[in-house]
Length: 101
Image (cartoon, rainbow, N blue to C red; front, side, top):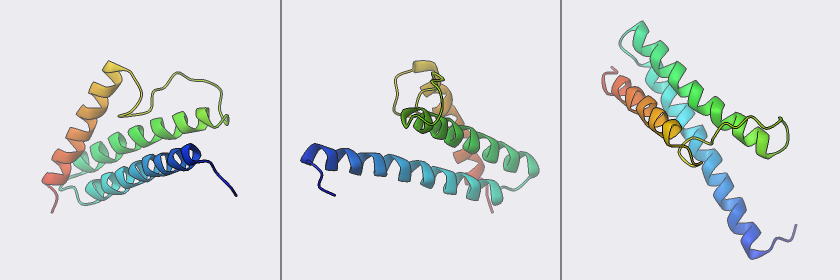
């Protein structure tokens, strides 16, 4: 496979973004698993899965696997209210992980 310089950079960036969401999923589920109570477990798992599912839907639309939905890619795509709610969700997951055992 012979790629041009810009295609190589794009492939590296896409790989980094996908790996970042996999890392977010792993850390969020780990925080949910180690949460001190059931509420923290459900909160961390639900918020983490909602962010990762949003990213998965966006990537599927970009690849042409799903029809266009209008869902922005968390942390990256334009959308002020979506960004605020995503950052709020990550803050709540961080708070749960801070109180983990």
